[in-house]
Length: 129
Image 1: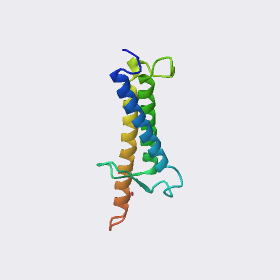
Image 2: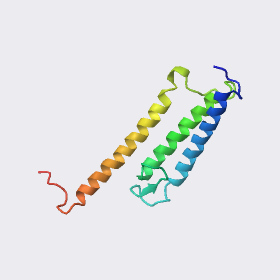
Image 3: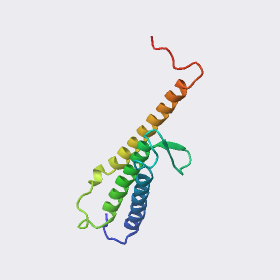
Image 4: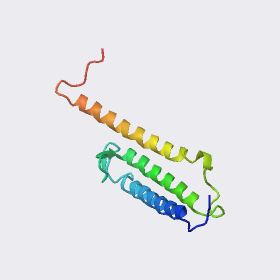
């Protein structure tokens, strides 16, 4: 792979890496503690299909975007600029781990919502005897 700074793949990596890192920082900024009260308060996200997520999920999304953005930037820059990078054989692990983390956090939010809705039903919580 050519590591020249101005080839097409490097420019695309820089653009997507910087965009992902900026989006991650933005998510961390809006999901920071003290902004929305307690941990169960939903953080409104302007992402179609997600709706509202809790602050911890916003933090997971932000950290995942920041991590993926860093690794895209690291692979788009010449090798002597950044020495901390994932090997080419292991690079697919980066987005997979980020995706699993975000997916698990979203699933936990949905399970918590379902449990809250079951407890708020007119019959009350089910008996556990």
